Length: 437
Image (tube, rainbow, N blue to C red; front, side, top):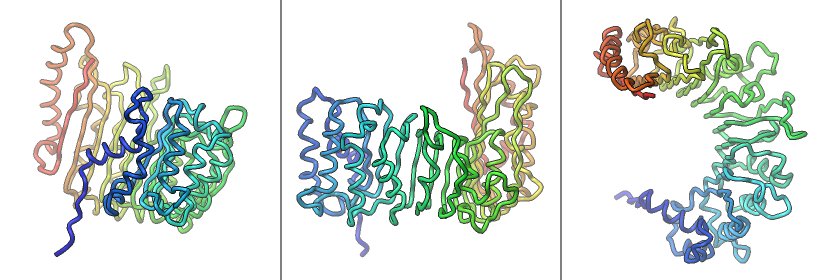
């Protein structure tokens, strides 16, 4: 008989970790003060399998309280006690993240005190098997963390066991921090790359990072994709054989037309291997202009292994930007070649709608070619489609609810009648969410 693996429910696990790992959330609650100090003793009372489950993921959160450094010292002692490191829980930690969402100045910016360094050093012990590392913040200045923290983070990125890296909300991060990284999963969001000088992040010089062989990659407009690509900034054609994306299976991108060229570079390097892709693209109108930024197209049929595709359209818009002025989200998918491998397709629209518009909702450009896109000939293996249309109806004034109700009573049936495939097909889940003002 196979062994039964019992696991504590998530809420119980979260409560234990919150009590033992945080402990000192309320400085006025003296009853919880001993909790963190006793954490090591309590952790020893769990059996091996329970400890492996409880202490698999640990996050160090910055806070405005004065005892941050005391908590760090206690956590370091719990991870690898100086008296006997083998009694610690460092061998159970697979996921570790540093989350800095409050004022970093009195804590992580203080270089003369053993804060982050004392924690990060513990992961270089032989019994450590760290698999995921994250540094998450909000406008954190990289240079203020200090050289010791820089070197330790760079060394952690090169640990043989590390498979995933998450960086978010950092300013002035050098491209070279990824040199020698062994990770397979890379997530980069809200970054300002380059050396930090005179209070600003300078434009990074071109540095290729050819060592990476990624399986999953997620980023937004903030990261210069060409520095991970096998291309230089001026290269026209990719060298796919040396690309870190040549074995990519999962890709998540957020971009607009201003960054479309960089995006196309990546897409050209993942065509043969990609299995899952998430795209969020932003369309907007230039201020005081009628010009709407258009997005490039790519041939979805050139992805022979793609099984899951999610596309979300968001608008940077003014109060007058409506669905009738929006370009079609599906227009970025060139339908000249079918994608025979695709099994799931999610399409999310987010737009403003004006009930007083002269153009009916079902005739808006945002829907252009959607019926042809969802045809059987385009995706012969398609099993499920989730189509979500989020409308922000602009109906101010006391009669707003009445106007909104009358508009929907006419618009939704017309929409279904114009695109019968949305109602007939058993594989299409068509949802309309209404947000009113």
